[in-house]
Each structure stands twice: as structure tokens, then as C-alpha cells.
Length: 130
Image 1 (cartoon, rainbow, N blue to C red):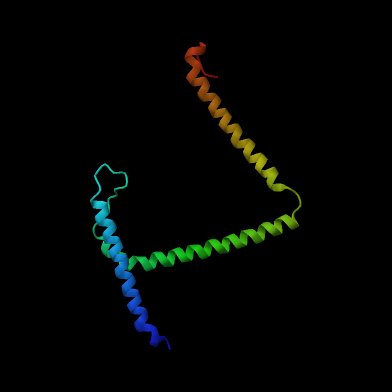
Image 2: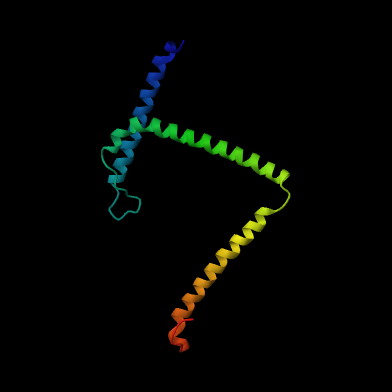
């Protein structure tokens, strides 16, 4: 049964490869015709056009795999969050976030205060930064 559709599959695959190859070639030609100071101009290697028929299945497989992994992790996250909200009633996340935010904020304030004292030292008349 599989061999009955192999011929159609191969024809479709070759047609899709040719179309993507043409797209890559056209994009390369458009890129080479852009002026040198154009921010959209990129430095593509000419051989990249010839790799397009071979790399697109790998990229397609990679994107589909990445999508499936994201969906699985999102489902796991939703399940664990629901269990955590039902099972753990103590707001430990807020306590943890308060400690982290206070620690990071204190470090930033200390660094910024030191910078202000160092750069304002000539105008304040102090000989050493505090």
C-alpha cells in the first residue's frame, strides 16, 4: 500500500524542493542587488542557495519537534501549577519573590549610590568617596 503512493510522494517532494530552491535563489539575487549601505543587506554565501533543498526538511523537523516540546512543557507547567495552587495554600512564592526583589534592589541601590558619590565627588568637596 505504501508503494502505491511513493511515486506521488517523490514527485511532490522534488517539486517542493525546486520551489524552495527557487525562493532561496531569488532572495539571494535580491540581496546582492541591494546597495552596500542598506541595513537589510546581509552577507550570504553563494553556496547557501544550493543547500536549501537539503536543509529545509531538517529545519521543518526541528521546528515541529520544538513546537511539540513547548506544548508538552506548557501542559506540564499548567498541571503542576494547578496542583500547587490546590495542594499548597501557603503563599511561599510571594515570600520568596519578596526576598529576591529586596536583595536585588538593595544591590542596585548600593551600586547606584556609590556611582553618584564617585562622580559627584569633585563638586561636593570630599576628598574620598564614602
